[in-house]
Length: 197
Length: 197
DNA sequence: CCGTCAGGTTAACGCTCGCTAACGTCCCTG
DNA sequence: CAGGGACGTTAGCGAGCGTTAACCTGACGG
Image (cartoon, rainbow over the protein chains, first blue to last red):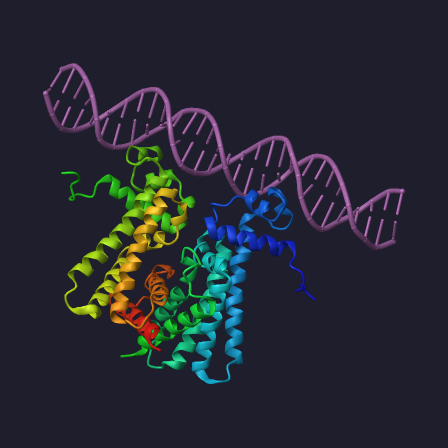
């Protein structure tokens, strides 16, 4: 009822291009005229779709955090093969996101501070819930890991999984599935080491 | 002869504050007046010490990359207890940097694209050398790891080690030395997993 | 056939920013 | 004690920014 899911509307088109540009040159480094040009209209035409430049960034960041959290919750709900499988599932989901939506991942931990207070609070809350989801999952697999340490480990693993966008060129990456497997192994290895005495 | 090393000169003072501000609100988000105010002089007074705002960022980023590389090279040169100890030494050095100079680490992988072409090329070259240093050290410990995979692993571990600055507040961190030990274990665990069949 | 509305356009505004110019002041040195 | 350099200051410029205003056009329902 609320929103259709079929054709990519102009709003979404704008958001995609804005995300790309913001990730490339930073929020303040991109002008509205550029964003407009990227979708074939020019400058102020964007204001038919968004209240302002800030609103675009806000919608992007809230969207990302929400999407990550929703995906995580779904995986938790669908978990039927034990804690190990759940943790693997969470890792897999995050890797997919990091590899397929590099721009969004980049924005996610780079431009958070450019948001209005209320939006930033919201995003941080979504992020926190997502982290807690992981912490619980990790501690199910490694009960001996105290919570504070688990949280640091989860944050660190996020840093690890989000590292691919920082590679200057996606070249030298040994293929998508190989990279995904590699990252998965690295993440599991890190968690295992965190729990080991 | 060239430069003394004793008292923190005004230049260094400016660089420190600029780093803090850039890390907090992004390069484009900080005005020269703010940087000036942070060191007690105002706005254009900075131009007695730097050619421009860009020059400050350039000097910061080149300095960081150079410092990391120099430290890494020193550790390689001093390595006398085998590959394992060298890798541990590299990890330890990087952790020290990440924990003690959070602002710089943040800038290092966030504002690189705001540099003039020549400066960016230089920084990237230093970064690349630093990575190669690590790749070699890792492959000494895990010879079965092919180079492409080792490089991905090294990048990922950098992301892991650099994750602490992203923690909203340094609170909830279980103390500096505990955090350092944790990160060290995570990094070693990741490498070990990368090499495991 | 008319009215409306979504989705564009261009012009222009006000503000902020990086930077320069012109000027002042202290201190050190010959 | 003259003079000059190091290090500030304030005033102001020119450009670029996000945003608004006013206007245009084509599609469509009654």
